[in-house]
Length: 356
Image 1 (cartoon, rainbow, N blue to C red):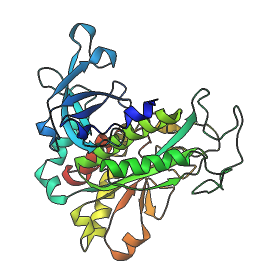
Image 2 (image 1 turned 180 degrees about the horizontal axis):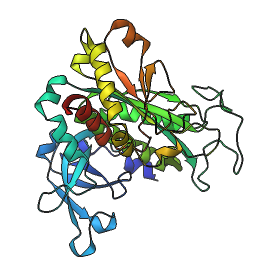
Image 3 (image 1 turned 30 degrees about the vertical axis):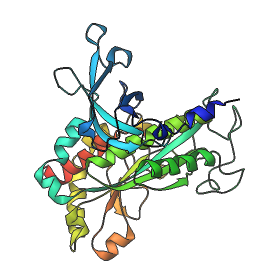
């Protein structure tokens, strides 16, 4: 007797050249992900060779019912770790039928910034540390926590090992391998300070690809937690009180910063970021004021400060960068629910293009 898994794991390449393309886009909240699949005649590796598609924007909060069509433009392709074979995941951005980007399409403006000759010449590298919390499905309480109660205080959980310290490792490792299979430049994972909270890192990635890869990794994580019956939360402060929040620390360097004498370039870039602190904070995620309190390894949301090896700063510079006189820095302000297209392009715009 056949099982559902027999059909899920069917190898299509044995009988057809056709492949399944899962088109993925960002929904009306700016943080929710949507997707649907279509059959295409054969394998495709160039997103420009894929057809545009459309969807009902009135059902995602992105268009009125009387004019609901939103157009999907394929922008990046990844291998599909769920269907496997030659099937693909397709990151798309969203436009009106007239070709105008809709308001939630943040990729369009980011692509313009990253295609500016001055930015291209600096080859901006990003490494994004995506923190997230796993919640029990029916009670929306962190995985492993007693329902309505609390575990022991923070301390043993960061990078912890053991049934009383780490909850959800099967999900985390499944996601890690699925991202590697997909072709995402995922560089590591670890358990975080609050139990039930984890982190994965994407990068180093260049320019617009950082945003594409983070969104693809988030999509894969949503799908894996769906299978596991667990809820994924990107809330920057899912539990109030003496518990760490969740961020998306963004590591950044340019060609000039990576070359000899780069430390001086880094300091000038940090000075620029400080001058535009309020603008960056306003674009770095919803609810970030609950996380950036000056406690739990954060700087206060209204204060800009930087330091070497200081995890209570807005911007942290590593000891190795200081010692070698070149390298990168970490912007610790972005919230876990930030849009990576917005954050990465804004950092490039401020540090490379903006003239105070």
